Structures are given as structure tokens and as C-alpha cells.
Image (cartoon, rainbow, N blue to C red; front, side, top):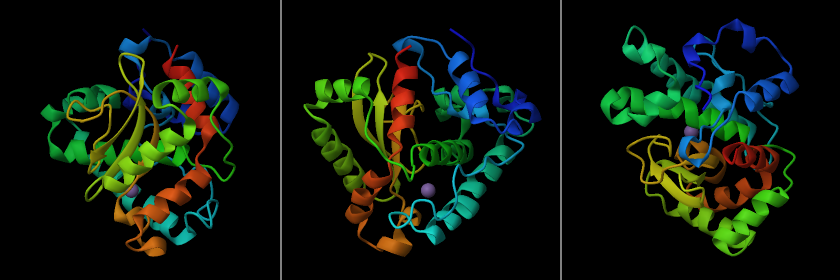
Length: 248
Ligand code: MN
């Protein structure tokens, strides 16, 4: 197993590379492991000294996700989670932990780290699984979805229901479990499937933010409409890559 790169150790060397290909190369080549030690590599691209950039413009996902919502969501909500998380781990033992190590024992870390660490990670993960160019799952992922859920449409229905029925604020997830199976579930607040407290555990492949701040300006109380619009902007290329990585 390749040890996860400590987020605090990644300096400016990565953040200014500006080459998606190189980042992808580093990301893929530094990952290894079976279902028992699955890690998602997204966070290895980032350090805690700089708030990660949104991978597209605020208006990129119009009309499904409006620019004003995206701007407030990224620049206010996400940034606050990042700042609070960095502040909370500063000068503590968690400074030297990877974010995965923090999540694995987050019940011991306290609510400030749990809520803000989750809020930081979940949004990075979410932005990366959205795209203006939405296609469909890879052949490999399609086969796994059909095997687990009966059809891709059935998976979408289950995932949408998880998103629509999460009471209050939270997230819907598609994960690969430690047994190597696909599973759908939801988490409250800013919890995620990498956390020891999560009702659904595994390596996340796809996330949907169902906090009101994610949709209220455009959709008001119509969360189901937002969930349906989400499917128009899923970055299946990224979700399929995550699945491929998770299976190594
Ligand atoms: Mn959010």
C-alpha cells in the first residue's frame, strides 16, 4: 500500500503545476491498493495553505446550477469550511495527519474538525464530479452498476431517492464498500463515507450536496427538481476514473 501523502506536506510544488495531465499522472501513479485499503486520491492534489480553485467558472453549469448559487457556495460556504478546518487542526497532532487518517478516527477529533473537515473535503469532491460536459458511466462502471442495482436507471432512482429523503442537510453518495461492492446512501450534515461515524462507509465515487445552500436561490424548496438537474451535469469521466482507481 502506498502511504497517503500528508496534506500538510504538499507545498507549492503541486499547486502551481497547472498541468492537468501531470496532476492526473501523479494521482494515478501514487495510488495502489485493494478493496481493504481504498483511498480516493482527490485530496492529494491540494495543500491546506491555499484554498483549492473551482475547476470551472461560476456559470459553467448553467442552467442546471446557476452562477450566483455557485459563487456563494464556493466562495462563502466552501471557503469558510476550509478556513475553519485549517484553523482547527493548526498546532494540533492532526496537522501531520492525512485527511483520510483524520476521517478514519473523526469521532475522536471533535465536532469542529468533523464538520469543517467534512465540509472542506466534500465540496472539493463534489465540484470534481460535476461538469458541463456530461456523458455516461464507463463500460466498466456500467457493468458494475447493472450487476449491483439491476440497471443504470435503477441506480439513478436509488441515488435520487437517497438525496431527496435525506432529512435536513446532508449528502447522497455512491461508494465502493470494503468488500468491493457498490452501495448508495446518505450522510447528515458534512459527514462522509470515509468517516468512522458514517452510516454508509467506503470509497466515495459520486456525491450530491443537498444542503439548501446548494439549490435554494434557484429551486427554493423544490429539492427533487435540483436532484433531477444534477444528472445533467454529472462528470461521468471523473466518476469512472474514481471507480477504476478504487478497484486497483
Ligand atoms: Mn454545500
